[in-house]
Amino acid sequence: MSEFLSSIATFFKHVFEFSESSPLLFTQFYFWAFFAIVYAVFAPIARRTHMRNAFLFFVSLFFYYKTSGLFVLILMFVTCSDYLIARRIAGSDDPLRRKAWLVASVTIDLFLLCYFKYAYFFIDMVNNMLGTHLAVHDYFAEVGNLFAGQGHFSVDQIVLPVGISFFTFQIISYTVDVYKERIKPVTNILDFGFYVSFFPQLVAGPIVRASEFIPQLYKPFHLSRMQFGVAVFWILNGLVKKIVLSDYIAVNFIDRVFDNPMLFTGFENFMALIGYSLQVYADFSGYTDIAIGIAMLMGFYLPKNFNSPYKAHNAGNFWKRWHISLSMWLQTYLYIPLGGNRNATFGTYFWIALISLVALILTSSWWASGAILGVALAVVATARLYPEKRKNIIANLNRFITMLLGGLWHGASWNFMIWGGLNGVGMIVYQFWRDMHWTARMIWLTVTVALLVALVSFTHEPVFNLLFVWVACIALGSLVRYIYHLAGGEREYKWIANAWAVAQTFVFITFTRLFFRSGSNLDPATANEVAWNTAKNMVHQIGSAWSMSVIPDIIMAYHNVFLLIVLGMIVHWLPDRWKRRYRIVFARLPIAVIVLLCVATVFVVYQFVTADLQAFIYFQF
Image 1 (cartoon, one colour):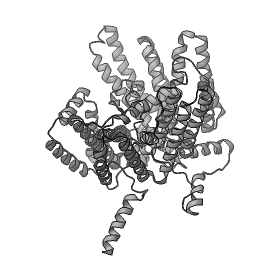
Image 2 (image 1 turned 135 degrees about the vertical axis):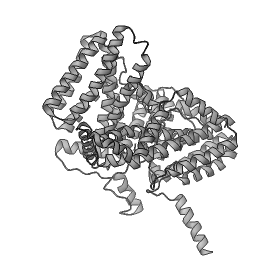
Image 3 (image 1 turned 180 degrees about the horizontal axis):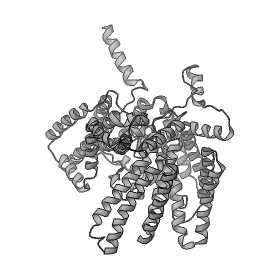
């Protein structure tokens, strides 16, 4: 009897105790057991909105506790603070008081985000700038030790709470929308807490706007037969993306290359980059698919977060298809307040100055910082002197700043800022390219190719080899299009031009991901150095001479991985109407057939499960 009671006690301890080594993931059996229990309780109260919302709020807090431990207190704190401040804002007619409350709310939220996410980044900047040797110290852990006993929490490192970037941006959008009177404040703190912490999307998005989700809190539960089938499809689709595609190609190929690029050939490094584009898409969109399916089973609808991003024709179009909820947030709460495409504001000049300072610290060169500041001032001066071009110049400047800060949102290292900056540059270059006459395009390409030929000849740097090959491909494709343009046959072969634009955009986005991946999943204390070395080593390998004779052997050695990459991209590039059709066909199948397909899918997915389940990539953000 005592052994039985001990087993029961051990079981409940495992259920209610946070384990850092095994957080509650969508890919774990424990999560689906958890969801089954939640749904069993949810079903009888689904039509009683207040009870349902309160129940799901407490369930979501428990889910976050199982994912992040005592960081659930941070989530509860910002929930309470923003709930109360939003009520204060809505209840005041004094513009200054309303603005003061808004500033207080945003300051609290951003302080917590910066403390946990950017402490190492700021300390590193200060040390580089002043030559000091400051070290990170966790004051929250120190306070915790006053209550739990000395040594219970480590004060020598700051651990990042899972999903803090997502729920911070979500909660800021709510307070700003209340201030702008786009929405009315939620009157019940349990309803508001449910909006902030809804567990399917809490730790990796999508970032849900209050105006889209809060009205759903008061609608009666409804789940049609068709909606049930679609929800199950999204869940299965997400599991296949995550485990069959993302985890398998990562563990069996991509992670090995990124861990030590110099041990692998240029072809292997190149294929790892290509594979990573599929991996990060399958991982992140897989999480979103599962979140959408789970929410739909409970009668709630989350926004679409991906729209076949690798079908994009340019970098700007890519960001309208990738992480759509973040792109919309950045546009609404950063790009437009900066002035958008209308004018430059104080915020524009502030960020120009700050970025120049960051460049100074990064390069330890007054020349680099002065060059960036000089270029920015020249751009602003051009906008002032040529009013007809002002709108485009200011829009591009604000767009670039937005992408830089979007990169910084993803991670506290220079690599993420470089990644964001490159995306901004890609968007700006496309804007100029689109407005250029064909003759001007060919002149620019000719000059660029000639410059790269000179750099390759005199410097022998791998990065210039890489750029030369890429620009030469663009020049060749543009030359063919130019000839068809002169011959009047461009319309007839428009589909080829579209395919070429998609391919070039995919290559560009893939190479920017070099900086994204090399900066991911690192110890914050050493992230900058390790990330930069990884990126530099991969560029060296890809840009150096390839041994073509070993490529067939490499393909045979990793044939399963490469086959999955090819199949994954083919499915991704299928027409949207095909995907919509097979999704609807699945949803309309008899329940018994859906059950059988679920069992078959789980069986196939299980064959691809790795020894250690891989956390979702965006958990780190």
